[in-house]
Amino acid sequence: MKLLQPFSDCTCQHCATLLRGGGVIAYPTEGVFGIGCNPADKSAVDRIVQIKQRDAAKGLILVAATFEQLDPYIATMTAIEQQRVAGTWPGPVTWVVRSRDSVSDLLTGGRSTLAVRVSDHPVVAAICNAFNGAVVSTSANFSGQPPSVDATETAKNMGELLDLIVDAPVGGLVGATEIRNIADGTRLR
Image 1 (cartoon, helix red, strand yellow):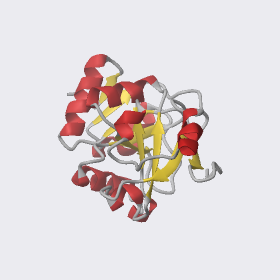
Image 2 (image 1 turned 60 degrees about the vertical axis):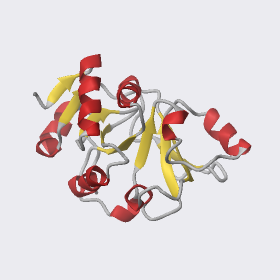
Image 3 (image 1 turned 120 degrees about the vertical axis):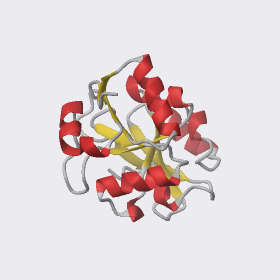
Image 4 (image 1 turned 135 degrees about the horizontal axis):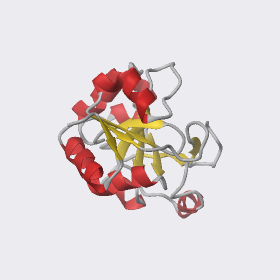
């Protein structure tokens, strides 16, 4: 199987199979390329941390196609918190929310919160729907380096470390998504 694959339903099904088997994939997001895995697979999450040479205390972002796909990972939101996210989802805003106690420290960075997003990017949504769940999403770069913005650059920089790269364009955002705190709506990035 070829590392770079054009976006299609077949590619999304292959991504889902890889995710279920512990694979790490790369795909376009709203503004940069991301790498992801099954957030419930500790070995796969640890693999991403190792690939990126990332401090595990930073935690990771989860993306989903629907709010329901995030349910296994996030604590119940208040009505005000639900209003905050409803105004931005699906879309390019990541929210730091309270996580369920069962969520891995590799995802939360050892905190009681987790960064999550319901994306409107068609590739992200299609992969999450094919997988039937949320997916880890962290920028396709080594820590401290600029994120990749296309499939070719991702393949050049870290292709030998990944199982598949979905070749499709990023969305119209310049750079990574903004991150907001659910508690008060403040912008963190």
